[in-house]
Image 1 (cartoon, rainbow, N blue to C red):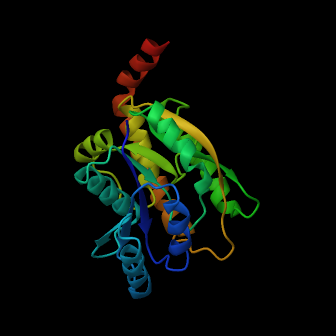
Image 2: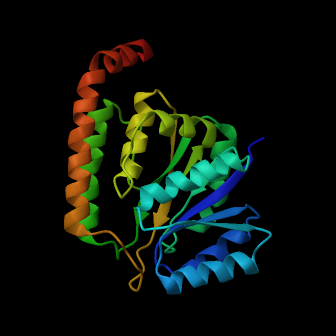
Length: 247
Protein backbone atom coordinates (compact mmCIF):
# COMPACT_ATOMS: atom_id res chain seq x y z
CA UNK A 1 0.00 0.00 0.00
CA UNK A 2 1.41 3.36 -1.00
CA UNK A 3 0.98 6.55 1.02
CA UNK A 4 1.00 9.47 -1.43
CA UNK A 5 0.92 13.21 -1.07
CA UNK A 6 0.61 15.96 -3.66
CA UNK A 7 3.45 18.48 -3.96
CA UNK A 8 2.75 21.83 -5.61
CA UNK A 9 5.66 24.23 -6.22
CA UNK A 10 4.29 27.78 -6.11
CA UNK A 11 5.81 31.09 -7.14
CA UNK A 12 3.51 34.12 -7.43
CA UNK A 13 0.48 32.07 -8.53
CA UNK A 14 -1.96 33.80 -6.19
CA UNK A 15 -4.63 34.05 -8.91
CA UNK A 16 -4.60 30.33 -9.74
CA UNK A 17 -3.49 28.35 -6.71
CA UNK A 18 -6.81 28.56 -4.85
CA UNK A 19 -8.75 27.01 -7.72
CA UNK A 20 -6.06 24.39 -8.33
CA UNK A 21 -5.91 23.45 -4.65
CA UNK A 22 -9.67 23.14 -4.19
CA UNK A 23 -9.88 20.94 -7.26
CA UNK A 24 -7.19 18.64 -5.86
CA UNK A 25 -8.57 18.35 -2.33
CA UNK A 26 -11.56 16.32 -3.55
CA UNK A 27 -9.19 13.37 -4.06
CA UNK A 28 -8.54 13.24 -0.29
CA UNK A 29 -4.76 13.18 -0.74
CA UNK A 30 -2.68 15.43 1.57
CA UNK A 31 -1.14 18.44 -0.17
CA UNK A 32 2.25 20.04 0.47
CA UNK A 33 2.42 23.61 -0.82
CA UNK A 34 6.01 24.71 -1.44
CA UNK A 35 6.26 28.50 -1.59
CA UNK A 36 9.34 29.27 -3.66
CA UNK A 37 9.95 32.69 -2.11
CA UNK A 38 6.80 34.31 -3.51
CA UNK A 39 6.05 38.01 -3.14
CA UNK A 40 3.61 39.27 -0.52
CA UNK A 41 0.27 38.75 -2.37
CA UNK A 42 0.97 35.08 -3.07
CA UNK A 43 2.63 34.53 0.29
CA UNK A 44 -0.46 35.84 2.08
CA UNK A 45 -2.74 33.80 -0.17
CA UNK A 46 -0.86 30.59 0.66
CA UNK A 47 -1.01 31.33 4.38
CA UNK A 48 -4.78 31.78 4.17
CA UNK A 49 -5.24 28.58 2.17
CA UNK A 50 -3.08 26.55 4.55
CA UNK A 51 -5.13 27.81 7.51
CA UNK A 52 -8.48 27.25 5.79
CA UNK A 53 -7.58 23.69 4.80
CA UNK A 54 -5.28 22.93 7.72
CA UNK A 55 -6.38 19.29 7.99
CA UNK A 56 -5.30 18.55 4.42
CA UNK A 57 -2.66 21.15 3.50
CA UNK A 58 0.85 21.78 4.85
CA UNK A 59 2.76 24.89 3.79
CA UNK A 60 6.54 25.13 3.50
CA UNK A 61 8.34 28.28 2.42
CA UNK A 62 11.77 28.80 0.89
CA UNK A 63 13.23 32.13 2.11
CA UNK A 64 14.10 33.29 -1.41
CA UNK A 65 13.11 32.32 -4.93
CA UNK A 66 15.38 29.40 -5.80
CA UNK A 67 13.58 27.85 -8.76
CA UNK A 68 11.00 25.18 -9.48
CA UNK A 69 13.55 22.40 -9.09
CA UNK A 70 14.54 23.59 -5.63
CA UNK A 71 10.89 23.75 -4.60
CA UNK A 72 10.22 20.22 -5.85
CA UNK A 73 13.32 18.93 -4.05
CA UNK A 74 12.10 20.56 -0.85
CA UNK A 75 8.70 18.96 -1.31
CA UNK A 76 10.12 15.48 -1.84
CA UNK A 77 12.42 15.78 1.17
CA UNK A 78 9.59 17.04 3.38
CA UNK A 79 7.40 14.19 2.13
CA UNK A 80 10.03 11.72 3.32
CA UNK A 81 10.17 13.38 6.74
CA UNK A 82 6.38 13.15 7.01
CA UNK A 83 6.37 9.47 6.09
CA UNK A 84 4.87 9.57 2.60
CA UNK A 85 5.96 6.93 0.11
CA UNK A 86 5.12 8.78 -3.11
CA UNK A 87 4.91 12.37 -4.30
CA UNK A 88 2.46 13.43 -6.98
CA UNK A 89 3.96 16.58 -8.51
CA UNK A 90 1.58 18.98 -10.24
CA UNK A 91 1.86 22.61 -11.32
CA UNK A 92 0.12 25.45 -9.50
CA UNK A 93 -1.24 27.25 -12.55
CA UNK A 94 -3.98 24.79 -13.47
CA UNK A 95 -2.46 23.63 -16.76
CA UNK A 96 -2.52 19.97 -15.73
CA UNK A 97 -5.66 17.86 -15.84
CA UNK A 98 -6.49 16.99 -12.22
CA UNK A 99 -9.02 14.42 -13.44
CA UNK A 100 -6.05 12.17 -14.26
CA UNK A 101 -4.87 12.03 -10.63
CA UNK A 102 -6.54 8.61 -10.13
CA UNK A 103 -4.72 7.25 -13.21
CA UNK A 104 -1.35 8.38 -11.85
CA UNK A 105 -2.21 7.04 -8.39
CA UNK A 106 -3.23 3.65 -9.81
CA UNK A 107 -0.07 3.44 -11.93
CA UNK A 108 2.07 4.17 -8.88
CA UNK A 109 0.21 1.57 -6.82
CA UNK A 110 0.91 -1.09 -9.47
CA UNK A 111 4.50 0.11 -10.07
CA UNK A 112 5.62 1.45 -6.67
CA UNK A 113 9.30 1.69 -7.61
CA UNK A 114 8.69 3.48 -10.92
CA UNK A 115 8.55 7.14 -11.83
CA UNK A 116 5.19 7.84 -13.44
CA UNK A 117 5.44 10.73 -15.88
CA UNK A 118 2.86 12.56 -17.93
CA UNK A 119 2.95 12.64 -21.72
CA UNK A 120 1.11 15.82 -22.75
CA UNK A 121 -1.75 16.03 -25.19
CA UNK A 122 -1.66 19.76 -25.80
CA UNK A 123 -4.67 21.94 -26.44
CA UNK A 124 -4.54 24.40 -29.33
CA UNK A 125 -3.37 27.30 -27.16
CA UNK A 126 0.06 25.83 -26.47
CA UNK A 127 2.80 28.40 -27.29
CA UNK A 128 4.52 27.18 -30.47
CA UNK A 129 8.02 28.02 -29.23
CA UNK A 130 7.43 25.79 -26.19
CA UNK A 131 6.20 22.99 -28.42
CA UNK A 132 9.16 23.09 -30.81
CA UNK A 133 11.76 23.31 -28.03
CA UNK A 134 10.05 20.32 -26.42
CA UNK A 135 10.67 18.18 -29.49
CA UNK A 136 14.35 19.08 -29.37
CA UNK A 137 14.45 18.04 -25.73
CA UNK A 138 12.88 14.68 -26.62
CA UNK A 139 15.72 13.99 -29.04
CA UNK A 140 18.42 14.95 -26.56
CA UNK A 141 16.88 12.88 -23.78
CA UNK A 142 16.71 9.81 -26.04
CA UNK A 143 20.36 10.34 -26.99
CA UNK A 144 21.51 10.92 -23.43
CA UNK A 145 19.74 7.82 -22.10
CA UNK A 146 20.22 5.60 -25.18
CA UNK A 147 16.58 4.80 -24.58
CA UNK A 148 13.03 5.70 -25.53
CA UNK A 149 11.80 4.98 -22.00
CA UNK A 150 11.01 8.65 -21.37
CA UNK A 151 8.29 9.86 -23.75
CA UNK A 152 8.32 13.41 -22.37
CA UNK A 153 10.88 14.79 -19.91
CA UNK A 154 9.37 18.25 -19.42
CA UNK A 155 5.87 17.52 -18.15
CA UNK A 156 5.60 18.60 -14.51
CA UNK A 157 2.77 16.16 -13.81
CA UNK A 158 4.40 13.01 -12.45
CA UNK A 159 4.79 10.65 -9.49
CA UNK A 160 8.06 10.03 -7.68
CA UNK A 161 8.83 7.12 -5.32
CA UNK A 162 10.13 9.11 -2.36
CA UNK A 163 12.77 6.76 -0.93
CA UNK A 164 14.49 6.11 -4.24
CA UNK A 165 14.38 9.73 -5.39
CA UNK A 166 15.73 11.01 -2.07
CA UNK A 167 18.64 8.58 -2.47
CA UNK A 168 19.29 9.97 -5.96
CA UNK A 169 19.12 13.57 -4.72
CA UNK A 170 21.57 12.83 -1.92
CA UNK A 171 24.13 11.48 -4.39
CA UNK A 172 23.72 13.77 -7.41
CA UNK A 173 23.84 17.55 -7.69
CA UNK A 174 20.87 18.47 -9.87
CA UNK A 175 19.75 21.88 -11.10
CA UNK A 176 17.31 24.03 -9.16
CA UNK A 177 15.33 25.61 -11.98
CA UNK A 178 13.48 24.56 -15.12
CA UNK A 179 16.16 22.03 -16.02
CA UNK A 180 15.37 19.88 -12.98
CA UNK A 181 12.42 18.02 -14.51
CA UNK A 182 14.62 16.85 -17.39
CA UNK A 183 17.76 16.15 -15.40
CA UNK A 184 16.19 14.00 -12.71
CA UNK A 185 14.56 11.68 -15.27
CA UNK A 186 17.81 11.19 -17.18
CA UNK A 187 19.67 10.35 -13.97
CA UNK A 188 16.82 8.03 -13.00
CA UNK A 189 17.12 6.06 -16.25
CA UNK A 190 20.92 5.97 -15.88
CA UNK A 191 20.27 4.19 -12.56
CA UNK A 192 18.01 1.69 -14.35
CA UNK A 193 14.96 3.16 -12.65
CA UNK A 194 11.68 2.07 -14.26
CA UNK A 195 9.49 4.66 -16.01
CA UNK A 196 5.79 4.51 -16.81
CA UNK A 197 4.25 7.05 -19.19
CA UNK A 198 0.65 8.26 -19.02
CA UNK A 199 -0.98 10.51 -21.62
CA UNK A 200 -2.63 13.56 -20.10
CA UNK A 201 -4.19 16.74 -21.44
CA UNK A 202 -2.20 19.93 -20.83
CA UNK A 203 -3.88 23.31 -21.21
CA UNK A 204 -2.12 26.67 -21.27
CA UNK A 205 -4.67 29.22 -19.92
CA UNK A 206 -4.62 32.46 -21.90
CA UNK A 207 -4.49 34.42 -18.64
CA UNK A 208 -2.10 32.01 -16.92
CA UNK A 209 1.13 33.03 -15.20
CA UNK A 210 4.25 31.42 -16.67
CA UNK A 211 7.72 31.88 -15.24
CA UNK A 212 9.36 30.23 -18.24
CA UNK A 213 11.83 32.71 -19.75
CA UNK A 214 12.07 31.75 -23.43
CA UNK A 215 15.67 32.89 -23.86
CA UNK A 216 17.16 32.33 -20.43
CA UNK A 217 15.53 28.99 -19.71
CA UNK A 218 16.17 27.58 -23.19
CA UNK A 219 19.85 28.44 -22.78
CA UNK A 220 19.81 26.78 -19.36
CA UNK A 221 18.13 23.66 -20.74
CA UNK A 222 20.55 23.51 -23.69
CA UNK A 223 23.49 23.66 -21.28
CA UNK A 224 21.87 20.87 -19.27
CA UNK A 225 21.55 18.68 -22.37
CA UNK A 226 25.25 19.26 -23.11
CA UNK A 227 26.25 18.39 -19.55
CA UNK A 228 24.10 15.26 -19.62
CA UNK A 229 25.62 14.27 -22.96
CA UNK A 230 29.10 14.21 -21.45
CA UNK A 231 27.67 12.34 -18.48
CA UNK A 232 26.23 9.79 -20.90
CA UNK A 233 29.63 9.44 -22.59
CA UNK A 234 31.23 8.56 -19.24
CA UNK A 235 28.53 5.97 -18.63
CA UNK A 236 28.43 4.69 -22.21
CA UNK A 237 29.98 1.23 -21.60
CA UNK A 238 27.59 0.54 -18.73
CA UNK A 239 24.58 1.83 -20.69
CA UNK A 240 25.46 -0.35 -23.68
CA UNK A 241 25.97 -3.41 -21.47
CA UNK A 242 22.58 -2.75 -19.91
CA UNK A 243 20.88 -2.57 -23.30
CA UNK A 244 22.54 -5.81 -24.41
CA UNK A 245 21.53 -7.55 -21.18
CA UNK A 246 17.90 -6.46 -21.66
CA UNK A 247 18.00 -7.71 -25.23
